[in-house]
Image (cartoon, rainbow over all chains, first blue to last red; front, side, top):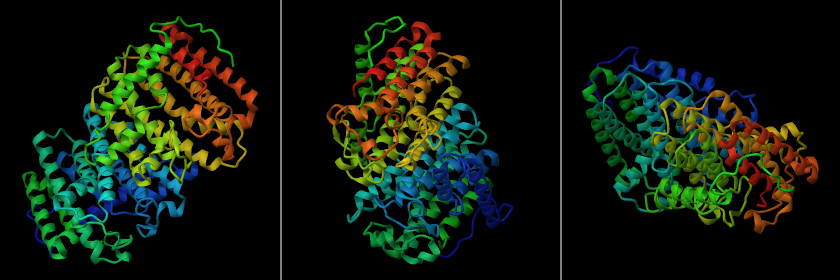
Amino acid sequence: MTQMSSPFTAPTPAFPDWMQSVQQRMEAALARLLPPDEAIPARLHQAMRYASLGGGKRVRPLLAFAAGEISGATPEKLEIVSAAVELIHAYSLVHDDLPCMDDDVLRRGRPTCHVEYDEPTALLVGDSLQSLAFELLTRETLGAPKQQLEMVRLLAHASGSCGMAGGQAIDLESVGKALTQPELELMHALKTGALIRAAVLLGALCGDDIDEAALARLDRFAKRLGLLFQVVDDILDCTASTATLGKTAGKDAAADKPTYVSLLGLDGAREFANELRTQAMDALSVFGAGASRLAALTDFITYRKF
Amino acid sequence: MTQMSSPFTAPTPAFPDWMQSVQQRMEAALARLLPPDEAIPARLHQAMRYASLGGGKRVRPLLAFAAGEISGATPEKLEIVSAAVELIHAYSLVHDDLPCMDDDVLRRGRPTCHVEYDEPTALLVGDSLQSLAFELLTRETLGAPKQQLEMVRLLAHASGSCGMAGGQAIDLESVGKALTQPELELMHALKTGALIRAAVLLGALCGDDIDEAALARLDRFAKRLGLLFQVVDDILDCTASTATLGKTAGKDAAADKPTYVSLLGLDGAREFANELRTQAMDALSVFGAGASRLAALTDFITYRKF
């Protein structure tokens, strides 16, 4: 895919600098919000920090910060909601990597949590990161209490059996099966899409009041973006190297898991990614310059190499 | 231990009938609040229902309902908060039974979740039950929004690394070690005590406004009760049969895990249980007849045979 020009006004600072500043801010926020290394039980807390700090693209926090620009959310509130979403993501990686699931040994270029620590600890790390996500969303004021309750509800729903964990369950059942495109889309809408939607909506919701129509627009954008993210992931899984990805490449194809590449071919998957990009951008157009970060992130997700 | 007479006025209906009515009500509530069997992903939802329905003493819901009598909470609200606490408890059992943790095959007289389904499904069942607990606490109005946020925070804190999951981590590290009584108490205060406290406090909080002093009293009661529950568990683990317990008896001693019986001897543990019962009752005395159900439950927990 060749990079296309964006119809959105370019904001300052430039995108790469903005991205880096959010990533650094989030690293510091997570380091502050996670229990300290030495707090009892120390080994569990060390493992929770190992699994959550020092890496990752922080795509979900970037999305929350970008969406927060639409509603004028403060960085302090965006840090909290981004940390909550990122901890749910981090817990899912720890559990997905376990021997009874994907049995993976490499994550973000380092040994996975159960390899670095042990299996029971990794299980408890995932469980505890999930609890901490909900605790963070309730410990400080992030908006009107009713709105804040709605944020907790959104994240809980996005994480559970009708969201991320449900998508993982469909994924498990689909190994070795020929899924149709709608079936594959449902799986990904839950497995990765639900949390991406939550990141966008929570980012927007912790700012000034945002009307139902705008939220629905953002939700439409987030749905297309979530799918786009997965399609690009599938493309990278079969075109990039393990070293570039920082995780085992080609493992989905090796595990005989259905992917957009296996369904549509490499060219077809790239074409589909471009279509989804266009649809995502269309959903954003109503926000004008306010959505320029979200638009730039959409391009980043479309054209990333890792 | 011989049953002692209670200083609290006996309420109607009689305790066994009340207990049964709460248990039946909770079974129906959980059946209604869990996603239906046929909802996609069906296998995950079936396994979630398998792990949560059809058994258990429902001690935490009983505690929430009993505490709710102090603040005049409605049964409809008590059902929701009780279900949330019970789902956290159910998730912890599913994960604790996994091969990498206790590797247990029997729970509530039936095959454990990973035996009946499979390991990856059981992992996702636990994860999803936790998410659902927080979703339930935010889907309906349970009080003033600010109070409701506090309820979510309490449950999240009680579940995580400074609560139940943290206690489990200490338990893992303590196998084969000689713990002192304070160390053993910290482990249990987190592992079982935190969720018991949450059940009592959430039950009280979903009723009329309850002042800080009363909450602190209830919390003191719940702390003693949580410990009492564990001491009695340890006694039963070495005196009752697997058939009576519905789970594998003697497994803690067999696993060389520290227990109150290994620390204090059987008679010493019984004596300690009686002390804790007295302290718990003392903390309740200020509530008079309003706490009669909590007092009856304390006796039930002290003198139970399974």
